[in-house]
Image 1 (tube, rainbow, N blue to C red):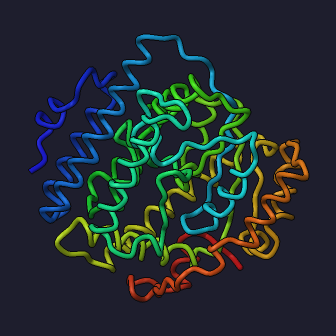
Image 2 (cartoon, rainbow, N blue to C red):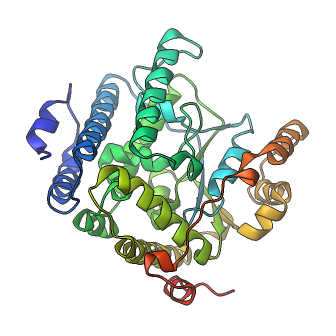
Length: 365
């Protein structure tokens, strides 16, 4: 049983404003009463939540000690999960003007560690141990979604600071918490998102932040309130390819946390959730300056990644020098993403069919 008092009392320092209490209460109730967690799953969930709140407390301490500067302008990559966002993320990360938070920084950002220092190596070591435990808990996950301690990761891990993140939904069937996320205003999440970046900038302020999370589709108004200089790249792909893949990923993760999984339940919940996300994005998009967003077609991107990257740079009036472009071309040529192990799944496995998916997400060929 996950108890809120025990979790809060385990945190060293003040957790900050009370914007975490409602989502934490709903999350724990949902995990306790709906998730059917295994013993290891409960331990892992408890550890993660405590780690997220401890990181939040560490960041809150910094905000009370120093005056944090305005962040560098961010560039957000978004699109349905499994739409090529990671490949684009890795390509754009090769630009020295871009900085993305690395996995180990998301897990252990504070106290800040000098590049190459013993403290940095220690944090990377502990992050690798965490990933080793993850692979033990969820065997084979790396073949679906690889994570490395020193690679950039998605903002959904930063959103855990506000206890508003899809991370928890991937872990278990928690419909009450999912319903909360579907209806919740994410301004508190981006307030902590910004504080996180501001803390990292105390040591290494980039020309531009490069950030990624499929759920950014749902929260452009909140992002622009938090980051007025934000720009967005949206990759669109046939949801027949993305939704079943996401369902397969979710089923793999949940198998490590829960006693049993219902694939048809995962299919319905995933389709319903991302249908809401896309409806909100479509509505929000109408009131946003088109200069702030560029659309990239997945098929065009896979056919010629560098061509699409050039379009992105041109749209936002960014400089793409020959050295950076050459590095991107080499990465494209060597990318293991073109030689991945087969990730086998079908819509029918999750109680879905192609026409249903396209109709629900209002996608036309």
